[in-house]
Image (cartoon, rainbow, N blue to C red; front, side, top):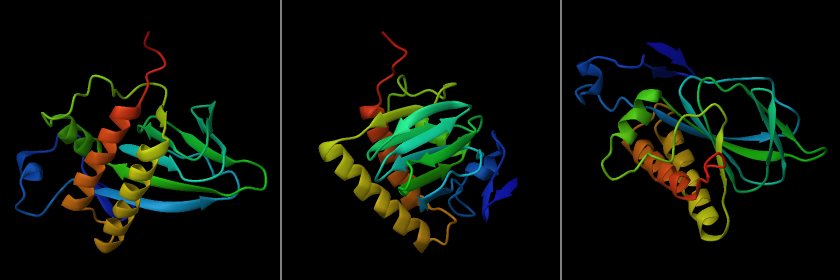
Length: 181
């Protein structure tokens, strides 16, 4: 197992003991808020990362391609995406990051109530721009995820997992695949 940020991210396709609940819930989901006032260093994370841009505008550079961001931009990146966040000159962007393991994503995708035909882990990052009630619902959901992450000392738990499933549902509902006709 690899350890990153005090959270254990086990390898993909772990054994049966990993999926049992005898040692507690094993699908860590961590969510935190960060204010970015100058360009970040180039990074990538293990697993899946949701980015939500809560205010102001700027861009995110993913694998050397620039994507504009603004309030309400929700983006999904995989481990093969290297990224850098660049706020507009003189502005600070509030970014909310929600990270989960690939195992958690696979577990969610096995849920019979979701139709994952629209969400695939593509070469380009998936994104949607939220407005109106979807924006308000997403911000409320992310605030709850942040509080749950703090409450569980960044180790994740069932609450975070279920809230992240709701976030994935919002993303699926609002995502528009620009590559499809």
